[in-house]
Amino acid sequence: MYLSDDVFYDDDADDDEEEEDTYLLTYLLTSIYCYLLVLAVVDTVVLFVSAFKTWIRLISGVEWLHGSVVTCRGLMFTLLVALHLSAWLIVIVSADRFVAVWMPLKALTLCTPRRARLLCVAVTGVIVVANVHVFWTIHLTQD
Image (cartoon, rainbow, N blue to C red; front, side):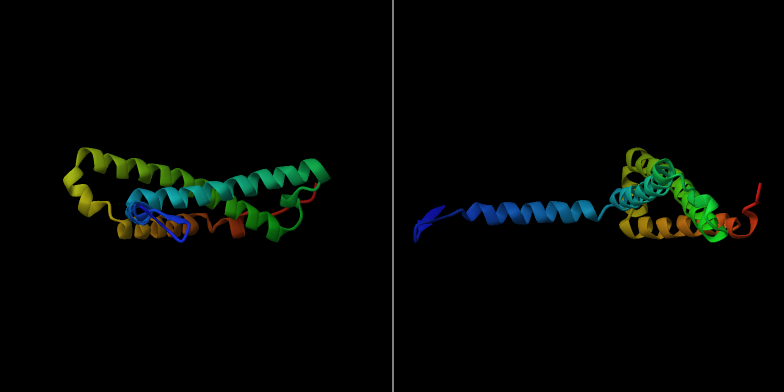
C-alpha cells in the first residue's frame, strides 16, 4: 500500500479481485452449477405460468385456459414440460451429488460441466417429446 497524489492505492485489492474471479470461474465450471442454473430457470417458469394465470383469473375473472385452443394448449404444454423437467432435474442433482460423495475419483470424469449441459439438453428433449401429445389431445368444449 502506498500513497500517491493524495490517492490511497491498495496493491492487494487487485490480487483479491483476481482470486474472487478465479473462484467464481471455478465454481461456474462445475456440473452442479449447470443443473442448479437450469433448475432455477425452470422453477421460475413454473411459478410464472401457474401463478400468473391464477392471478389474472382472480383479478379480472378471465381464465386463460378458456381463451382459445392455442392458449390452452400452449400454457398446458409449457406448464407440463416445466413441472416434469423440474422434478427430473432434482433427480439428476441427487445422482450427481451421490457420485461426488460416494465415488469422488470417478466424479472428476463423470461429473463434468460438458456432460451436465448435454444431460440437461437430452432430458429437456425427452420431456418435450413426451409432452408434445398436449397439442392434439387437449380440446376446449362448450358447456
